Image 1 (cartoon, helix red, strand yellow):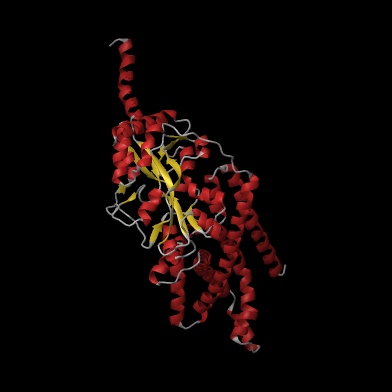
Image 2 (cartoon, helix red, strand yellow; image 1 turned 45 degrees about the horizontal axis):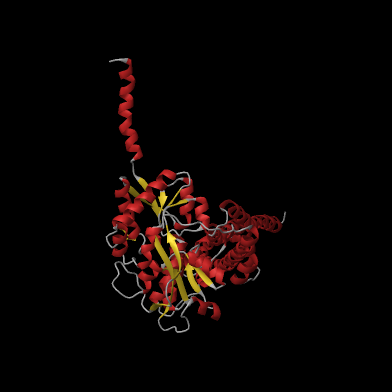
Length: 487
């Protein structure tokens, strides 16, 4: 074998490997919580939705397999920027701020917004009626409908999922109408036999669809090759009729979609980034909600914890068992599940029992943290020597007076540090209340970053607000420990 052959042979063997690397699987990210008709799991547990069908068609056109990656919708663009996946497709609306930061494909769907109301509500025939009558409209955070409501100065309630607003609208809790993209409204508010429909009875469309926009596939700015390949694949799907077939299957094709043939790209337009003077008041509003939830929830937890701890220590045996069951149950279930149950589950079990979101949040956190506080208080009270009880009894003090004047004040010194830690933890745990349409500090951060505010700047301000609220608690705790210890 010649020297040239020895060099050429490994190179020839490397060519197929390089070719396979270029044609390896692509990673597509979307959020299954986005639901029908985008991407969801059907009754057999299989991925379904019109974007799943588009993904399959893209795989055939690109000649590369495409694998699905579950990713929270709020973090899709952050994950794309980090390179956690190759592209995102999840009803992503084309906006100027997204076009500045990412490479968006040619549109694959022209959407419009649709207002939905209760069938027996004759007050609302258009969005103007909501503005004139001061009504509240439910929508998804960071969506085009969310931005439109802000522009029109209409009161809104923000949700994390598309189920929540229609469910609340149906039972008349907190919202008078829902404004979302037409594909969502078709599957939640229109009677008929749409595949995998999630329709809520008693709802209707108010007026015609309006406020047109576009869905596109998002890739990184530096991945222009993939962006061009996806554009070309979508173009071929459109020209061959494959895209129309998919949209017809999901009953999403309408005359507006014929204009897709003329939309190779969408002009980005101009929009101002959200500056400090605009986003700071919103963050402060979210911070105030966080403080309110934390203080009221902790007050409920302290009262419940003290009662349950006392029952575990001094009540008859059957009552002690019930108190223990309370502690184990509420420590054993996630607070997120508890919030879902209180807000969405109770009305289904007890018709007419519809908790306000803030009430549900306070009750959920109070019950959950009350179980932890009960164990802290039980340990602190149990650490007081039995001789304290005996000495107080010898002085003629009743058990209740002994507990209130002698035992509890001493136990507080032991209880205070872990209770303060729980208080700080509760500040941070309030972030989960966004699932029941409460907008606190972390949810406000997510809304702002999806609306054009810079991730780094808003994150820094948000973190500072959390520190301003939580760090002083540590100093207060240490001050009280020192003061009450008698040093």
